[in-house]
Image 1 (tube, rainbow, N blue to C red):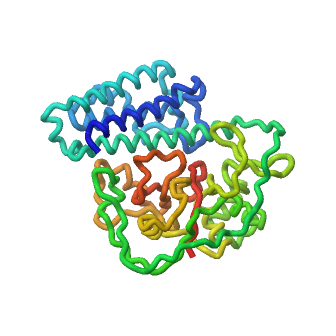
Image 2 (spheres, rainbow, N blue to C red):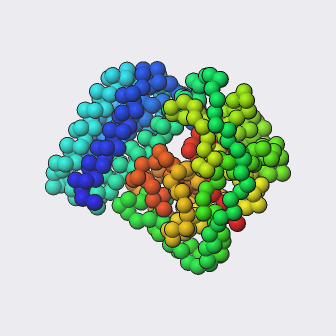
Amino acid sequence: MSTDSLISELEQAQSLVLALVEDADETACRSQYHPDLSPLGWHLGHCVFTDCLWLHEKIRGDNSVTEPIADLYIPPRTPKSERGGLLPAKDALLTWARELQAFNLHYLRNLRPEWKEHPLLQDDYIIHFLIQHNSQHYETMLMVLTQKALAEYQPNGGRHQPLLPKALNGERVDIAAGHYRVGGTRPTAYDNEVPPQKADLGPFAIGRHPVSNAEYLAFLEDGGYRRQELWEPDGWAWRQENGICRPDHWRQSDQGDWFAVGLRGSYDLTGSEPVSGISHFEARAFARWAGARLPHEYQWEAACRIGALEQTGRVWEWCDNTFHPYQGFAPFPYPEYSQPWFDGQHFSLRGGSLYTRPAVKRPSFRNFYEAGKRHIFAGLRLVF
């Protein structure tokens, strides 16, 4: 892709983040709807700040925009719960964001010769990076709006098409033992995807489809949330402590029918669609109930690369292994993107959701969350 095309893609990614705040009112812009999520307005400010950090402070040595607001927009410096109260008014935030987004695009389209030699601009690396950064925050902002919808939902007594349980689909694909390539290459890949690895895998069978809503309901109705033997000890403790008994966005009507609440309110759950809104703990419990396990992320990527998987990119898919550095890992362009999360507490997810932008939907992309997180658009696929 040409540099001009990449800059246009960045412009589109920026406009999507901007539009979500434009459509929100002042309260929604600065409210925190989930303890793990920042307010909408903060995400917009952080994206603009990050664009300026790399394009101007890092490449040109000019921190006049970033230094005064660094404490607000560098995540470790201000707790999520305090960010909304420190934001400017919505109109002022939008004006500031529009002006800087336009200035940054103009800068990229009119680079001086000496700036083009900067290592971050080689192979358009930093443009790829900023496209992906804006795209990831766009999806997170849709998580915020989903949590807003859940918090504000009021049952109206409406009827929903019943979701019926279904036995587990046995369709699976046999993957032969062998050496498989995993990982990506720059300029698109993040530091945790490189260098590419050769994974030595034994034979395995993987579900052709992710687990569906109907299949997950069968687990629920078979006492999946009540049967301690299906859960890891820490998962069972988490379930009890938090009163977890269903996926995050599922709700049950007075008539006993299951439905879901999302960005646009309540909607029927389609039995064949992949289940979403579950934690790693729940995914592992389902896998044990099904007599299976979650895939290692190398198995998932190998199967994806040879075209064995269907319905990828519908939900993020939990993998069994913790997020870890590849052999030869080196942090780039800064340590904080990946390195702090190699802590044994974060688990890998693969594939992407319906809300994931194309820039980060690739077989090698590695998402990562702690086991108890379920506000993400995540489901599972099984390995046998």
